[in-house]
Image 1 (tube, rainbow, N blue to C red):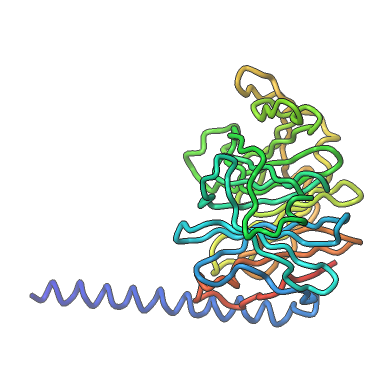
Image 2 (tube, rainbow, N blue to C red; image 1 turned 90 degrees about the horizontal axis):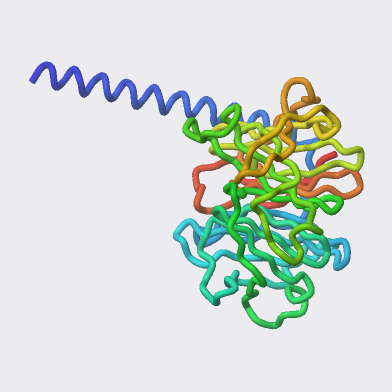
Length: 313
């Protein structure tokens, strides 16, 4: 009995210690946010953060001056696409995501990007294509994908930039057996995948830092990533110089030798701390617009609650 009491006392002390540490970290994150909030400008509302929906991807269409945002449902209900007026911030429509075979998309939708004609959305080793024009014109409460295609990597985020479709992984996994044990970013020249959607042969493969959630490429060709994990750790905004200008190695993928590059200390430029749970982003006129998933009621314990997309230089 005495031993049982000792064990219980030790367990109580451990639980209280953990609670105290989390409380201090919680305070630290909020103080950091309050000190640095002058660097952020709140813009339009984050959509899809109620009823167990979790905001993920964000992109901008210059043709229609709209923002497209994705959310997945933590209870595995239908994933959603939101169309937002960039000038007013008004929600124009919300659309359920339906697959090309008419099934409901209940996957963990993540990245979204567009080349002003096609919209790509990544989810669980798959990439789905949608017509941007149809998204704009539809009067239905859903949008059906044109094609669903399997990917050789998980595909947690994506970016279209200068005719290249980039698809990258978040993976924080010690058993992810790839060179350097790092997640991968794969780049596809869309001219090669328009007719025959062959995602098994990318034009580039790049070794990524871990925990990447979103990506942009700046006008001067710097690669910028958001990295985040849990509500209890600051997010990062990490800048790298253009790794494609460096000498590359080779990566064997499905019997094909693909040019292989690495983001490393050699091409690292800077790291800026952000509030926890940064996700997708886009850049316009030297401004980054960043979405945070901590606004979701799934993370009721997360704070600060960034219920608006923030803009920062």
